[in-house]
Image 1 (tube, rainbow, N blue to C red):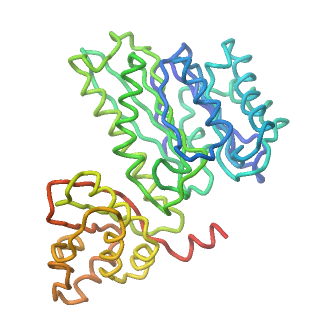
Image 2 (cartoon, rainbow, N blue to C red):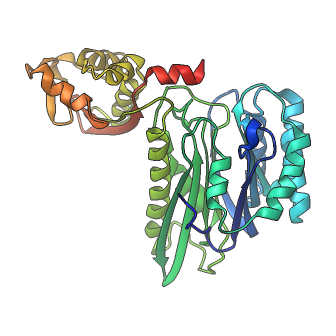
Image 3 (cartoon, rainbow, N blue to C red):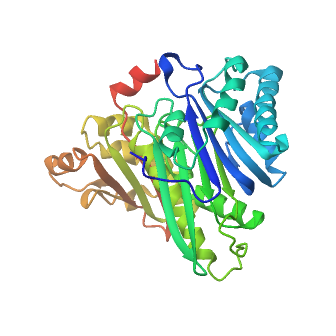
Length: 393
C-alpha cells in the first residue's frame, strides 16, 4: 500500500517483529533522523497516563530528538516504578546505539494496560530496528504500529518553500478508545524542513486541534495518546518561523497530513461501517457548537441508531439538550445531509423513508442549526455495531 513512499531527506524508519505479539506479527517500530531534529509533541490529557507519555514530556523539554522507538501489544500504562524504568531503558538503549543522549529519544507504547514490558524482547528489538532502518521502510513501520487497526495509516505532503522542495510524511495508528483529547492513538510526523522549535510546537498543537482532537469513535480517552513532530532541516532551508513569508504553506501542509491521518482513524473505527460528520452551526459560540457536536458524536444511542439505519432524530435532540451548550428547543433544525428531519424543534413531516435513505449510506452528515448565533464546529465520528463489542469483550 505504501511501498512506493520514501521518508523525507535524512530520515529512516523500520518495523519488525520482536516477539511481543504472537504469530510473528510486527510489533516494534523506529523513526530515525540522521541528524538532531527539532521536536514538538502533544499528549493525552488523561490524569492516568502511561510511562512513555511521562518520559516523552520530559524529553520534549530538550527540544531536539534523534529518534522515536515504539512497541505495540503492551501499553506500559499503570505499571508503576517498573514501567518508568522500562520506558527509560528503551530510550537509553536506542541512545547507546545511535550515539546520542537518552533525552534525544522519544518512546511510545500501545496495547493492553497493566502488563510490564518484556525488555528481554524489546532491547534486542531496538538493535534490530536500528540495523534495519531505511528510508523505504514506510509500509513496515506503519504495520508495526497497529493494534486493532485493520490497515496501516500514512499521509504525505510535498510543497515548495523559497524554491526548496519540502516533504512531510506522517504515520498514525488508532481504531478504538478514540475521543479527544486525543485517543488511543500514536502519530509521528516527519519533515526535512528546518523549523524553529516554538513555531513547530505551535503549529502541531493547532493542527492537532483541528484533526485528531475532532474525532470520536467510542468516547473513551486513552492513557497513551501521543503525537510527535520531528523537523531535521535536511533540505537546508532558512528555519521557518510563524513570521516567515511562506509559513502558511508549511502549516497548511502539516494540517493536511494530520487531518488525513485523523480521517483514516475514524474510517477504521473498531466495528464501524459508517462515517458520520456532525456539523453544528448557529450556536452562541464556537465552544458551544463543539459541545453540542461532541455530545451527538459520543452518544451510543446515536451510534447504534446509525448502525441500524434508524434515523432517530429524537436521540440527537436529547444529546444536544444535555450537552451544556445553550439550546432553545423551539429553534433547533436538524438535517440528515440535506433532508430536514426537525424544524423548530419538532419533526418536519418528511417521510421516514427519505431519512432512512440517508442513514443507509456509508458516509453522511448530521447538520444542526441552533439559530442562536454564529458559532460553528465539526466533529467526525462513526457508528457502533455488534462487532465493536466482539472486538472489546
